[in-house]
Length: 151
Image 1: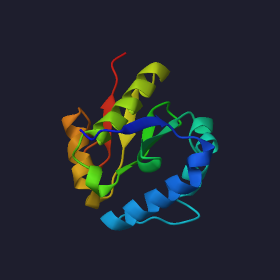
Image 2: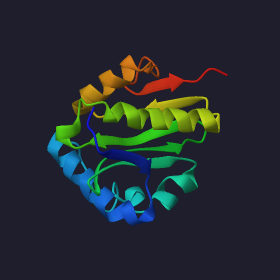
Image 3: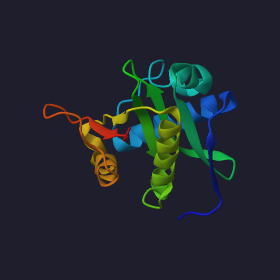
Image 4: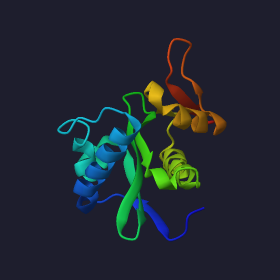
């Protein structure tokens, strides 16, 4: 586990840096990232996440955002994971799991029925991590994953 990091809820002041980090990491792993579309919710976590029934967390090391995870609420009340990323040199150290635990805590507190995640095929490692944590395919025709909370 890396030392000297903090996981906290994103604030408006994080917006520009969070969007820049997300775009850089997306480019590094080959995930499309369209400025003016994909960065919009990141630039204002209040409007992009909290106003939509969700939350966005950041990992901060040495005053720099190095990772993030966000969820929003779908029409049926479930939460949907919108993004989950870490700087390359920090992957595999457990920080991604800690971010995911924040989402689980939030979901349980909010009493949601499920947490959903959809990934592009290039994100196989993230899919594998979620499956180990209890996510399963949402349906036979989809690569989307779902974690259902017990009532």
